[in-house]
Image (tube, rainbow, N blue to C red; front, side, top):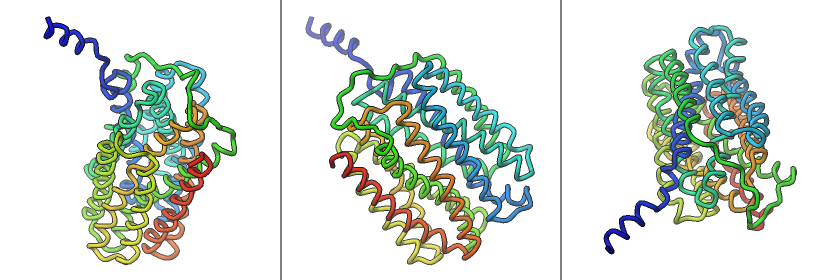
Amino acid sequence: MLRRRLRLRTLNRPPAPELRAPVFSYLVSFLVLGLSVSILGPALSELRDRSGTDLGGVGVLFVGQACGYIVGSFVAGRLYDKFDGHRVYAASLVVLALGLVVLPSLASLPTLFVTFVVVGVGGATVDVGANTLLIWELGAEVGRPMNILHLCFGVGALSAPLVVYAGFGIAAYLASGLCVAVALLVLRAESPLAPTDVEHEHSTTSRPMLALLSLFFLLYVGLEVGFAGWVHTYGEEIEFSALAATWLTTAFWVGFTGGRLLASALGQKVRPKTLLAVSCSLTLLAAGVLVVGNGRAAPVWVGAVLMGLATAPQFPAMFTYLERRIRVTGNATAWFIGGAGLGGLVFPWLIGQWFEASGPGALPWSMLILGVLTLASFAASNKALGG
């Protein structure tokens, strides 16, 4: 009888947060998102040659993708708050697929720019959706799943340089097909509803507060996307072979994936605030290694891996940190993803201009400056939310 009761209790126990059907859909979609929006960096040299421009000119494609991210994020926030979340989510995956599928057939810089805007719009809407819907689905249980969600993004991004090395067309068609497949998967699960009465330590979400919190995402993504987007070119400019430069990009994403794995393991044991402070500080160490190394092979490899390890936990940890302090709506998430998109617009382009003007040393120094600003931004946000 006792054994039968234990068996019934086990059968009636709710599934772990990570295994719920909608959560599984979000995890898979973020794997695809990581691959889709990370294609640009490893393909930059090919796109430069195809479009007949220079490094400074081809950097405008980062601007196009980031512009799409900004527009998509603010539109997405309103859509998720007003309509069925999974229908919006599936539509955004289809938009992303449409942008990706035409990329291999384009050669002119203007058409590539417009297409990367479309990729940015689709990617941002997926990004806003996964972060918002996961919080709506899990509430206070979101900590570890949030880290796993962004780990999936890292795994997808890790595969991007290797798939692009096999062929830019292969990468674009593969990502496009996966987007459509995941859209069908998302539509099979019931969409969660936004919480109505939720208690938070702090619930102030005025525009000035949202702008301050968005500053962290702006600086962090400028740092992450700036490094991931330019490290392949940096490797080539310090006389790495094309294959070695590809592996250098992969080394960053290996460190990034390792950082997200570690953050997932520590998600229920370490406070988000502590994780953020440590990872932001570690970013400064990674940038310092690259600056002092001055293009020498060993420090470059160590710095790339360490940069990935340091930056990986920051985005999901900040979302978990904010979930405990404000009511996370689609509109609030749109501010954060919009800030991230603006960072992805401004800083990779600025790094490209600095790179073109003064050479590869611009990348390590820009990472150090952005690392200091990101840490200062988190400190300001923490103080504004009451520490």
